[in-house]
Length: 216
Ligand SMILES: NC(=O)c1ccc[n+]([C@@H]2O[C@H](COP(=O)([O-])OP(=O)(O)OC[C@H]3O[C@@H](n4cnc5c(N)ncnc54)[C@H](O)[C@@H]3O)[C@@H](O)[C@H]2O)c1
Image (cartoon, helix red, strand yellow):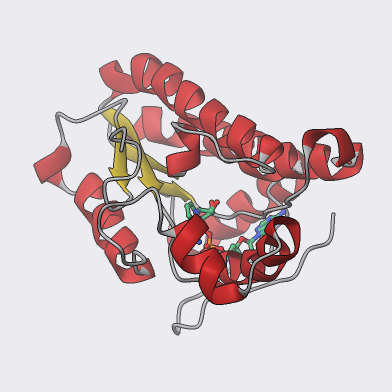
């Protein structure tokens, strides 16, 4: 699979790897072990989006989103779990979405995959607790990133709105805190779940969505 590579801006080592390919994950895992030792913390973060009504949603796009968001989380977790069990300590942190808990129109594949990530996380939390491994998910509302920005134009088209209206009347409407979450805030929550302070928290899905989903 090819996709728009969006490498980290910070000066950190990275390996280009398609998370929907079990072979590529095995190669990337081996490269990581060789360079840095057995990893003990996995953050399943990569993502893509496609927006269309269900009856116009191309099967190819459906399969691509499920492959990256859900199967990718499964495959990367599957690759690291034997090492985590062996070390008797580990963290798997899945960046799901508020769309793992609630739905929005035109996001069928994304919403289905992100709900799936929360189910998968709970299964892994149950299986791995006895090995000292916790598994938690983060459920952000809109975070100001490339993935979010590229949706604005498409939403404007689908909803016959301008871009400012999309931001205020669609993206921030269900939240009571009318601000986008920042990538740094999501990273801080990842760091918390990875820390010993969170050692008794597992199977949770923590919303960072400005109160989205409270029923207003
Ligand atoms: N931005 C938001 O509003 C928002 C809200 C809720 C949840 N999320 C979730 O946060 C996570 C990060 O998204 P983001 O907003 O930083 O998006 P982004 O587009 O800025 O980054 C996504 C990353 O995923 C990588 N990627 C895409 N397909 C891949 C593949 N097949 N294999 C490996 N890597 C691949 C891209 O190269 C990119 O680096 C995603 O899981 C997304 O669903 C984002």
